[in-house]
Length: 322
Ligand code: COA
Ligand code: MG
Image 1 (cartoon, rainbow, N blue to C red):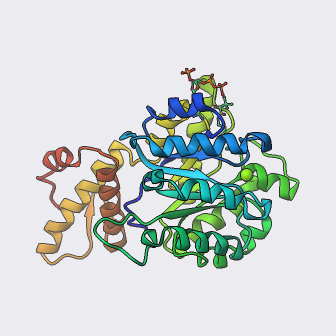
Image 2 (spheres, helix red, strand yellow):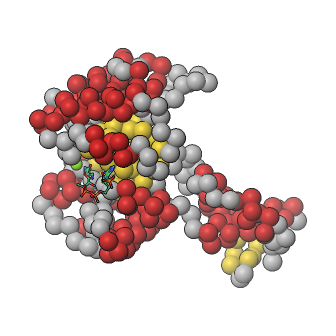
């Protein structure tokens, strides 16, 4: 089970060409903000979007955004070089935490990006940690059948790689699929992505966009999609509208009942261990090493999500193993 300290429950795209959206985004509370230079920006607006994003990065860092990222254009478009230059060659690059790379089909799609980052910002390489360093991260978008077949090599392609994102719309285009509400047509690809990321110890797996975002039905569909994605092993989701953030971040946080159960297990296990018992029971359920491992991970995640775990510990301090 991943014990990552990176939280990317929601990744909000903001079209880089829209000064209005970027302005609005500054006050948005979200784990990861992704200023977009790719598909939400028309070719004629790319230059303008680069300049907007540079300005955005050069402002004071909004405290309500945990991670600032930029989605560049894919390397074969010929636009990636200008994109990288504009976001890496600015004092604002200090505020840039991650680069989201679209249409990564094979390992070589990341090699060029690795080289440019290494050359322009050598101090941000994850292999040169210092107390002040904030290693730059890459999050790769998986959008094609070829990418799914090459997941192993992609996961090994970059020391900066910190997560994978599944892009359903481009994947559907590639396979001539039609997206259905059940999302079963994406099951193999999503499961492959979550499994590969875990196998390579990448902390993040970010699920498809829920394209419905308006009204109660939009919120209900979003929540169902989040829970389905979580069940497949994803720990976050791409969102396109600020309205989608609260539901998404809640769905990818542990629930109150889940955390209470985990805390009871951890407290009970400490006492069981002192009494020399490796396996014990709670409410008729057998508790052993993997169950406790998962409980500890749930408690850590709850702390990371800002839940008041101390209060829950206090409530259950008398928990005894049965
Ligand atoms: N980021 C920041 N702010 C956003 C936003 C976003 N992605 N989407 C909407 N907002 C803001 C609007 O500026 C508006 O602010 P206001 O109330 O101060 O005027 C408010 O949220 C409500 O917006 P709304 O009118 O409901 O949305 P819209 O109809 O203007 O735009 C979309 C709808 C889908 C076009 C827009 O949300 C969007 O462009 N999302 C991102 C799409 C994208 O990046 N796609 C590529 C990746 S898949
Ligand atoms: Mg795409």
